[in-house]
Amino acid sequence: MIFACTISLLAMLGQVGAANDAPSANAGEKSEFKPWAQFYTQQAAEYRIFAGNGTQHELELQSTPVLQYSNPVRPTDQHGTVYVWTHDGRPEAIGSMWSSQDPKDSGQRVISHEFQSLSVDPIMSQHAKRVGRQGVVPDWKTSEAGIEWRLLPDDATPGKTAVSRLLQMRRLAEKFSAQITSSDVEKASDLRLLIQPLYRYSSAATGVVDGGLFSFVLATDPELLLMVELRETKDGSRWHYAAARFTNRPLKLMHGNLEVWSCAKAEAYVGHQPYFLYWGVGRRSSAFDR
Image (cartoon, rainbow, N blue to C red; front, side, top):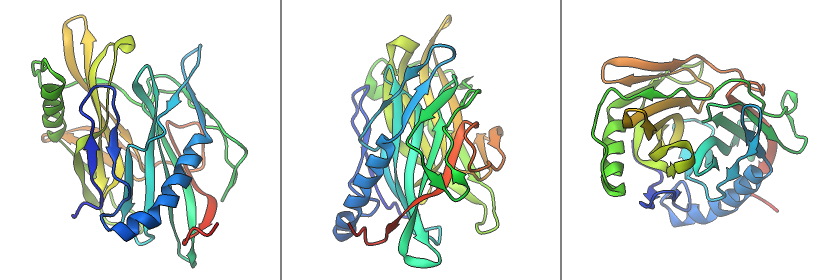
Protein backbone atom coordinates (compact mmCIF):
# COMPACT_ATOMS: atom_id res chain seq x y z
CA MET A 1 0.00 0.00 0.00
CA ILE A 2 1.09 3.61 -0.58
CA PHE A 3 1.54 5.73 2.52
CA ALA A 4 -0.98 8.57 2.61
CA CYS A 5 1.00 10.42 5.27
CA THR A 6 4.39 10.41 6.89
CA ILE A 7 5.49 10.70 10.50
CA SER A 8 8.62 12.55 11.58
CA LEU A 9 10.12 11.60 14.92
CA LEU A 10 11.80 14.08 17.28
CA ALA A 11 14.53 11.78 18.51
CA MET A 12 15.00 13.30 21.95
CA LEU A 13 13.37 11.45 24.83
CA GLY A 14 10.03 12.80 25.96
CA GLN A 15 9.25 14.41 22.61
CA VAL A 16 6.24 13.59 20.46
CA GLY A 17 6.64 12.08 17.02
CA ALA A 18 4.93 14.82 14.99
CA ALA A 19 2.62 14.00 12.10
CA ASN A 20 2.63 16.02 8.92
CA ASP A 21 -0.08 18.56 8.17
CA ALA A 22 -2.62 16.26 6.55
CA PRO A 23 -3.38 12.66 5.64
CA SER A 24 -2.41 13.36 2.04
CA ALA A 25 0.71 14.58 0.28
CA ASN A 26 -1.31 16.82 -2.04
CA ALA A 27 -0.98 20.51 -1.06
CA GLY A 28 -4.59 21.30 -1.96
CA GLU A 29 -5.87 18.44 0.15
CA LYS A 30 -3.65 19.56 3.03
CA SER A 31 -5.26 22.98 2.88
CA GLU A 32 -8.72 21.44 2.86
CA PHE A 33 -7.88 19.24 5.85
CA LYS A 34 -6.52 22.06 8.02
CA PRO A 35 -9.92 23.15 9.43
CA TRP A 36 -10.73 19.50 10.14
CA ALA A 37 -7.46 19.10 12.05
CA GLN A 38 -8.31 22.15 14.14
CA PHE A 39 -11.82 20.84 14.74
CA TYR A 40 -10.54 17.44 15.85
CA THR A 41 -8.14 19.09 18.30
CA GLN A 42 -11.01 21.06 19.78
CA GLN A 43 -13.01 17.84 20.13
CA ALA A 44 -10.14 16.10 21.95
CA ALA A 45 -9.73 19.04 24.33
CA GLU A 46 -13.35 18.65 25.49
CA TYR A 47 -12.42 15.44 27.31
CA ARG A 48 -10.85 15.39 30.77
CA ILE A 49 -9.38 11.96 31.44
CA PHE A 50 -8.30 10.59 34.82
CA ALA A 51 -6.42 7.43 35.81
CA GLY A 52 -5.66 5.77 39.09
CA ASN A 53 -6.60 3.02 41.48
CA GLY A 54 -7.90 4.75 44.60
CA THR A 55 -6.25 8.15 44.20
CA GLN A 56 -6.91 9.53 40.75
CA HIS A 57 -4.73 11.88 38.74
CA GLU A 58 -5.71 13.86 35.67
CA LEU A 59 -3.94 12.96 32.47
CA GLU A 60 -2.37 15.64 30.30
CA LEU A 61 -3.57 15.95 26.72
CA GLN A 62 -0.72 16.39 24.26
CA SER A 63 -2.52 18.86 22.01
CA THR A 64 -0.32 18.18 18.99
CA PRO A 65 -1.69 15.05 17.29
CA VAL A 66 0.74 12.16 17.04
CA LEU A 67 -0.81 11.12 13.72
CA GLN A 68 -3.15 12.47 11.08
CA TYR A 69 -4.49 9.71 8.86
CA SER A 70 -6.85 8.69 6.10
CA ASN A 71 -8.30 5.33 5.16
CA PRO A 72 -9.10 5.05 1.44
CA VAL A 73 -9.46 1.28 1.92
CA ARG A 74 -12.83 1.91 3.54
CA PRO A 75 -15.58 3.20 1.21
CA THR A 76 -16.66 6.08 3.48
CA ASP A 77 -13.55 8.28 3.02
CA GLN A 78 -12.51 8.13 6.66
CA HIS A 79 -9.95 10.57 8.06
CA GLY A 80 -8.97 11.70 11.53
CA THR A 81 -6.29 12.58 14.05
CA VAL A 82 -4.80 10.69 16.99
CA TYR A 83 -3.90 12.14 20.40
CA VAL A 84 -2.28 10.84 23.57
CA TRP A 85 -2.94 11.70 27.20
CA THR A 86 0.08 11.30 29.50
CA HIS A 87 1.08 11.13 33.16
CA ASP A 88 4.70 11.65 34.25
CA GLY A 89 5.59 11.64 30.56
CA ARG A 90 4.11 8.20 29.85
CA PRO A 91 1.07 7.70 27.57
CA GLU A 92 -1.89 6.42 29.62
CA ALA A 93 -4.67 6.86 27.05
CA ILE A 94 -4.97 7.34 23.32
CA GLY A 95 -7.88 8.75 21.36
CA SER A 96 -8.90 9.35 17.77
CA MET A 97 -11.29 12.04 16.60
CA TRP A 98 -12.42 11.08 13.12
CA SER A 99 -15.17 11.38 10.57
CA SER A 100 -16.52 9.51 7.57
CA GLN A 101 -18.78 10.44 4.71
CA ASP A 102 -22.48 9.87 5.33
CA PRO A 103 -23.44 7.12 2.84
CA LYS A 104 -26.89 8.69 2.48
CA ASP A 105 -25.67 12.28 2.07
CA SER A 106 -22.28 12.90 0.48
CA GLY A 107 -22.44 16.52 1.62
CA GLN A 108 -22.25 15.49 5.30
CA ARG A 109 -19.60 13.79 7.42
CA VAL A 110 -20.39 11.83 10.59
CA ILE A 111 -18.12 12.56 13.57
CA SER A 112 -16.94 9.71 15.82
CA HIS A 113 -14.70 9.41 18.89
CA GLU A 114 -12.56 6.41 19.79
CA PHE A 115 -10.40 5.78 22.86
CA GLN A 116 -8.20 3.06 24.28
CA SER A 117 -6.68 2.80 27.74
CA LEU A 118 -2.89 2.37 27.81
CA SER A 119 -2.93 2.23 31.60
CA VAL A 120 -2.76 -0.64 34.07
CA ASP A 121 -5.13 1.39 36.29
CA PRO A 122 -8.81 2.23 35.81
CA ILE A 123 -9.66 5.17 33.53
CA MET A 124 -12.43 7.74 33.85
CA SER A 125 -13.41 10.56 31.50
CA GLN A 126 -15.52 13.66 31.89
CA HIS A 127 -17.08 15.58 29.04
CA ALA A 128 -20.03 17.79 28.25
CA LYS A 129 -23.32 16.02 27.64
CA ARG A 130 -23.28 14.56 24.16
CA VAL A 131 -25.89 12.58 22.30
CA GLY A 132 -24.97 9.88 19.79
CA ARG A 133 -26.95 7.46 17.66
CA GLN A 134 -28.00 5.47 20.73
CA GLY A 135 -28.67 8.29 23.15
CA VAL A 136 -26.57 10.13 25.71
CA VAL A 137 -22.85 9.32 25.54
CA PRO A 138 -21.73 7.96 28.94
CA ASP A 139 -18.48 8.85 30.62
CA TRP A 140 -15.66 6.42 29.93
CA LYS A 141 -15.21 4.60 33.23
CA THR A 142 -13.29 1.33 33.37
CA SER A 143 -12.49 -1.02 36.24
CA GLU A 144 -9.81 -3.04 34.47
CA ALA A 145 -6.39 -2.47 32.96
CA GLY A 146 -6.16 -1.48 29.32
CA ILE A 147 -2.87 -3.32 28.76
CA GLU A 148 -0.83 -6.17 30.19
CA TRP A 149 2.96 -5.91 30.21
CA ARG A 150 4.95 -8.94 29.13
CA LEU A 151 8.68 -9.53 29.00
CA LEU A 152 10.03 -9.65 25.47
CA PRO A 153 11.62 -13.02 24.71
CA ASP A 154 14.48 -11.19 22.98
CA ASP A 155 16.96 -10.62 25.77
CA ALA A 156 18.68 -7.79 23.92
CA THR A 157 21.21 -5.72 25.82
CA PRO A 158 19.72 -2.21 26.07
CA GLY A 159 21.44 0.45 24.01
CA LYS A 160 23.34 3.14 25.89
CA THR A 161 22.08 6.11 23.85
CA ALA A 162 18.65 7.36 22.76
CA VAL A 163 19.58 6.80 19.11
CA SER A 164 20.69 3.19 19.64
CA ARG A 165 17.61 2.41 21.74
CA LEU A 166 15.31 3.80 19.03
CA LEU A 167 16.92 1.49 16.48
CA GLN A 168 16.58 -1.37 18.96
CA MET A 169 12.88 -0.64 19.61
CA ARG A 170 12.19 -0.60 15.90
CA ARG A 171 13.91 -3.96 15.43
CA LEU A 172 11.97 -5.43 18.34
CA ALA A 173 8.68 -4.12 16.91
CA GLU A 174 9.48 -5.56 13.47
CA LYS A 175 9.46 -9.06 14.94
CA PHE A 176 5.70 -8.72 15.45
CA SER A 177 3.00 -9.01 12.78
CA ALA A 178 -0.71 -8.28 13.02
CA GLN A 179 -3.95 -9.10 11.25
CA ILE A 180 -7.46 -7.69 11.29
CA THR A 181 -10.17 -10.25 10.60
CA SER A 182 -13.07 -10.06 8.17
CA SER A 183 -16.39 -8.34 8.81
CA ASP A 184 -19.68 -7.98 6.94
CA VAL A 185 -18.21 -5.21 4.80
CA GLU A 186 -14.46 -5.85 4.85
CA LYS A 187 -12.13 -8.75 4.18
CA ALA A 188 -9.41 -9.93 6.53
CA SER A 189 -6.17 -8.09 6.02
CA ASP A 190 -2.60 -8.06 7.23
CA LEU A 191 -1.75 -4.82 8.97
CA ARG A 192 1.38 -2.82 8.26
CA LEU A 193 3.70 -1.63 11.01
CA LEU A 194 4.58 2.05 10.96
CA ILE A 195 8.27 1.78 11.67
CA GLN A 196 8.51 5.12 13.48
CA PRO A 197 6.77 5.20 16.88
CA LEU A 198 3.81 7.53 17.15
CA TYR A 199 5.17 8.69 20.51
CA ARG A 200 8.59 8.39 22.16
CA TYR A 201 8.89 8.84 25.90
CA SER A 202 10.60 8.11 29.20
CA SER A 203 9.30 8.27 32.76
CA ALA A 204 11.65 8.16 35.73
CA ALA A 205 8.65 8.16 38.10
CA THR A 206 7.40 4.85 36.70
CA GLY A 207 10.78 3.24 35.98
CA VAL A 208 10.58 3.59 32.19
CA VAL A 209 14.03 4.21 30.73
CA ASP A 210 12.76 4.51 27.17
CA GLY A 211 9.56 3.68 25.36
CA GLY A 212 7.83 3.82 22.02
CA LEU A 213 4.16 3.61 21.04
CA PHE A 214 3.95 1.85 17.67
CA SER A 215 0.95 1.20 15.45
CA PHE A 216 -0.15 -1.39 12.92
CA VAL A 217 -2.24 0.33 10.26
CA LEU A 218 -4.76 -0.21 7.49
CA ALA A 219 -3.72 2.38 4.89
CA THR A 220 -2.54 4.89 7.51
CA ASP A 221 -5.39 4.23 9.96
CA PRO A 222 -4.07 2.69 13.23
CA GLU A 223 -5.90 -0.52 14.14
CA LEU A 224 -3.58 -2.21 16.66
CA LEU A 225 -1.19 -0.53 19.11
CA LEU A 226 2.10 -1.98 20.28
CA MET A 227 4.04 -0.47 23.18
CA VAL A 228 7.72 -1.34 23.59
CA GLU A 229 9.31 -0.22 26.85
CA LEU A 230 12.68 -0.57 28.50
CA ARG A 231 11.64 -0.96 32.14
CA GLU A 232 13.65 -1.14 35.35
CA THR A 233 13.31 -4.49 37.13
CA LYS A 234 15.07 -6.24 40.01
CA ASP A 235 17.19 -7.93 37.33
CA GLY A 236 18.12 -4.64 35.67
CA SER A 237 16.67 -2.88 32.62
CA ARG A 238 14.59 -5.28 30.50
CA TRP A 239 12.53 -4.83 27.33
CA HIS A 240 8.76 -5.36 27.66
CA TYR A 241 5.78 -5.09 25.32
CA ALA A 242 2.03 -4.57 25.56
CA ALA A 243 -0.69 -4.65 22.89
CA ALA A 244 -4.02 -2.84 22.65
CA ARG A 245 -6.82 -2.61 20.13
CA PHE A 246 -7.76 0.57 18.29
CA THR A 247 -10.71 -0.79 16.34
CA ASN A 248 -13.90 -2.63 17.22
CA ARG A 249 -12.99 -5.49 14.87
CA PRO A 250 -11.20 -8.68 15.99
CA LEU A 251 -7.41 -8.63 15.86
CA LYS A 252 -4.48 -10.93 16.45
CA LEU A 253 -0.80 -10.24 17.08
CA MET A 254 2.02 -12.64 16.27
CA HIS A 255 5.61 -12.70 17.49
CA GLY A 256 7.40 -14.75 14.88
CA ASN A 257 5.16 -17.79 14.40
CA LEU A 258 3.58 -17.57 17.85
CA GLU A 259 0.25 -15.84 18.52
CA VAL A 260 0.84 -13.70 21.61
CA TRP A 261 -2.30 -11.56 21.79
CA SER A 262 -5.79 -11.40 20.30
CA CYS A 263 -9.15 -9.73 20.85
CA ALA A 264 -12.74 -10.40 19.82
CA LYS A 265 -15.15 -7.90 18.29
CA ALA A 266 -15.78 -5.01 20.67
CA GLU A 267 -19.13 -3.56 21.62
CA ALA A 268 -19.68 0.09 20.75
CA TYR A 269 -21.62 2.72 22.70
CA VAL A 270 -20.56 1.51 26.16
CA GLY A 271 -18.24 3.22 28.62
CA HIS A 272 -17.04 0.44 30.93
CA GLN A 273 -14.50 -1.18 28.60
CA PRO A 274 -10.84 -0.18 28.08
CA TYR A 275 -11.83 0.41 24.45
CA PHE A 276 -14.42 3.19 24.11
CA LEU A 277 -16.09 3.84 20.72
CA TYR A 278 -18.83 6.30 19.89
CA TRP A 279 -20.00 6.56 16.32
CA GLY A 280 -22.13 9.47 15.24
CA VAL A 281 -21.66 12.01 18.06
CA GLY A 282 -22.04 14.86 15.57
CA ARG A 283 -22.20 15.90 11.94
CA ARG A 284 -20.38 18.46 9.80
CA SER A 285 -20.62 19.63 6.23
CA SER A 286 -18.12 17.83 4.03
CA ALA A 287 -16.96 21.25 2.86
CA PHE A 288 -16.65 22.33 6.50
CA ASP A 289 -18.99 25.29 6.08
CA ARG A 290 -18.83 27.71 8.99
